[in-house]
Length: 181
Image (cartoon, rainbow, N blue to C red):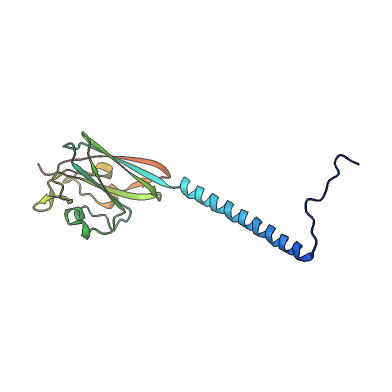
């Protein structure tokens, strides 16, 4: 006898068993293909996600509430909405309230789709959850935007505050300014 003589791995006794075995192998094959495609798609989606870390500087007081509003829709971008009650806010992508540390605060937004976004930040000094203003709508609390647009020299708009997020980690540094002096 040969050293390499082998016994059959599987003995099939009937046509019915052969049919069942074929179906089982086909299902296993399709399940393997489906799982591989699903894993590849998940991996691709994760690789093509963005995150945005917003570093807010020049915060006037320790422990102040920093409100960071992230916009994805150009039509929704309106810093004026921050002056009203939050229940009336519409169209923003995300809002994060963060207690500040000495002079700075860091907020991170994860799982974003790459593309154009805009950020508006204000320092809620009196913790009333809205941006306080004086006539005719001039903020009396420090504000900031992506691209550090400085009112009243330039009014923040979608076009001058938008930033492009690429897949992976993105950082935007925003310096708070006091418009009303």
